[in-house]
Length: 50
Image (cartoon, rainbow, N blue to C red; front, side, top):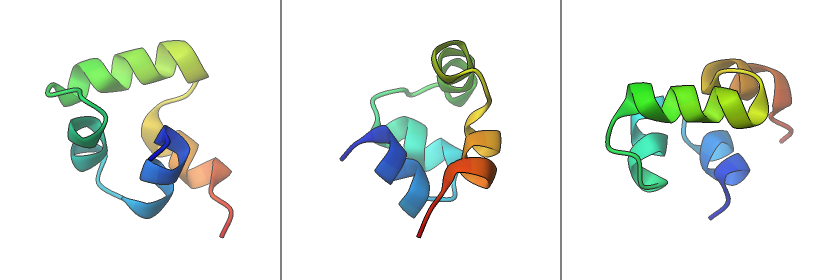
C-alpha cells in the first residue's frame, strides 16, 4: 500500500510509521517532512480526498 493510501486510511501516525517500516515515529516524521515538506499530520489534514 502506498504511503498516501496508508495515511488516508489510518489516522494514527505511529501505526503508519510501523506499516511503512519505521519503528521510531519521530524519525518517520522527520524523514516525511524532509521528503514531502510538511508533517504527516499536516499532510493528512490537507491532502486527503475521499
